[in-house]
Image 1 (cartoon, rainbow, N blue to C red):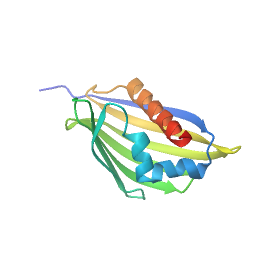
Image 2: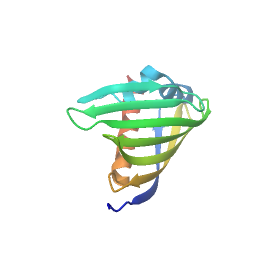
Image 3: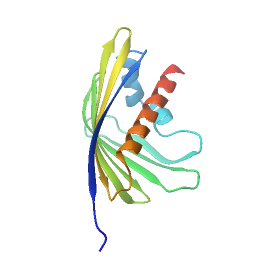
Length: 152
């Protein structure tokens, strides 16, 4: 029998965006905008992307890098306060193998004419298939992609 394992980790990322909280919030709420920064990118093939941005709503993305494995990210929105807070739970898998379960809070606070975004994530990784360092790095890259989309 294969030994099963879990690893728990929490991390926080803070970022400033020169856009208003309303503009940053819209980049999470609007399906076309979120798709651009969340799943699209050079070398990525998107097999599925849907977004139902509301409390209890479901988001699914299925994608692969070049001819690699299929990565699935399934999200359920737990709480949404317009222009202020998004709380979500998400599960990731690779080729159907569970990778992780996560709970995330995204807070948006006005700062000057821009927005201070605080991203807090609690993760459980299964069977050593992902690492806290890799997940945090990936989240930082997504928040950088959000910045590029907002600046465009």
